[in-house]
Image 1: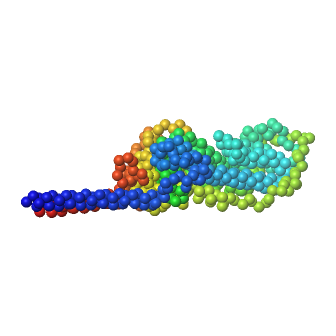
Image 2: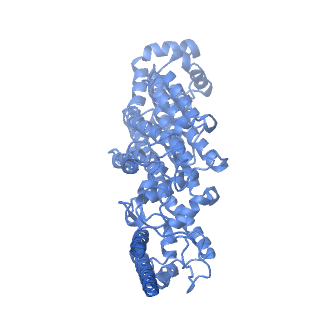
Image 3: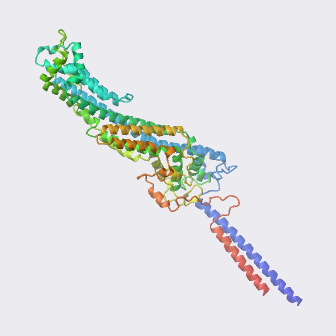
Length: 596
C-alpha cells in the first residue's frame, strides 16, 4: 500500500516537473518572439542603435550630436537628441517654416511689382508718343497756332503721366479740372487762329486783358462744344482706374512684404512642436535622412494648422482683393481704358479745334458780345513754328501692348485666391512627403497616418488633430493692420470699378462693399460663416475625401518607443496569449491525469 502511494507521489512530482519545464520553455519562446519582433520593428523603421548614420546630416545644419545623449528629448524621444538639441532644432524648423512662407509670398509679390512697372511704363510710353503725335498734328494742320499751343499740350500730357508715375500719386484725382484748364488756355489761341486766319495780324498776340476775358467767358461761350466734357470724362475714368490699378498692385505687394516680417511669436507651441516633429524627429531617433518621408496628410494638418493661426485671417480679404483686381484689369484694358483713350486723344483735341473753326462766325459774335473787339499787341510777334517737332525721334508706330504680361498677371492673381491655404498644398505636394500616407512618418512613428485632414477655415481648424486653432480671435495688431489695408484696397478698387463702368448698379456695389466689410469683422463672425471655407481649385478637396471617413478622429497611433510600463502591440501579444492557453491546457491535462 505504501509502495503504491509512493509511486503515485513520484508520478505527481513528474507531472509537476513536466509542467514546469513546459512553462519555462514557452516563456523562453515568448521572449525570443518579442525580441525578434522589436528587432524587426526597428529594421522596418530604419532606426539604428547608434547615431553615426545621422551625424553627417546634423553636421550639415550645424547641430552637434553627442555620441550618446545624456537624456532623450521630451518631444522626439530619440537617443540622438537631448532637450537642448530639440530646442535648437525647434528654432531651425520654425525658421524654415517662415522661409518657405517668404519664398511663396516673394514670388507673388514679384509678379505684382513687375506688373505695376510694366503697365506704368507702357502708359507713360503711350502718353509720350501721343504727345508727340499731337504736337506734330498741330504743327502741320494748325501751323500758326502751333507755337502757342505747345506748352498747354505738354502740360496736359505731363499731368497724365504724373498720376501714373511712381511716387507721384495725387490723392485728389482731378483730371477733369486739368482738361478743363487745358481747353480754357487753348481758347485764346484757337480764337486768334479762327478770327485772323487769313490776315497778317496772326503774328501779333491778344492783349493779356483780352485773353483773361476770353478765359473767364469760356463756360458761357463753349467754343469747343461738348468735346472738352467728353475728353475730361474719358480721361477721368481711364486715368483714374489705371492709377488705382498700379497703386493697388504696389500696396498689395507691400502687404505681402509685411507678412514676411511677422514674428514667430504668433506661432503656438504646438505648431512649433509639430514643425520639429515633422522635420527632425526621425533623425533624432537615428533614422538616416531620406529613408523615410513624412506623411502627406500629416504635413497638411501641421502646415494648415500653423498657417491658420499665423496668417489665416488674411486669406479671405486677400481673395476678395484678388477678385476685384481681376475686374479692374478687365476695365482698364477695355476699349474705354487708358490705352485707347490716350491713343485717340490727339484726334479729340484736333476735333475740338475744328469745331471752333467750323463755327467761326457764330463764335466771333459771342466773343465780341462778351469781350468786345480784340485788342492786339502791335509789336509782339508769335514764335516761329518749329518744323523739327516731327523729327523728335519718337517712333510713329504705337508701342506694343503688354498683352502677355497682363495675361500672366491675370492667371497669377486668379491662382492667388485663398493664397495662404494653397501654400499648404504646394508645400506638402513636394517629393519629400509620402502621398499614400503609408510607411511614412506620422509624427509619432513610421506607419500609416490615420487622422482625418481638416478642411480650411477657422471653425474646422479648431478640430485639427495636430495643431488645433487656439483662440482664433487673439489680438494681433500687425495682422489686423494688414487685414485693414486689404479691406481698404478692395474698397478703393471697387469704387474705381463703379466710377469707370456705367453698367454697374451703384446700389448693388454699395451692398457688396458693405457685405465685404462685415465679412472681416471677427467680432460679428459666427462659426458657421467660417466652417469649411474652402474655395474651388484649392487642390486639396480630394485629400479630405480620402481621409474623410474619420474627419474628427483624434486617437493616437501607437508610439515607436512605448514608455515605461507600456506593453508592445502586435505579434508579441499574440505569442503571450498562445503561451497562456497552452500552459492552462497542459496544467489541466496533468491535474486530470494525476487525479485519475
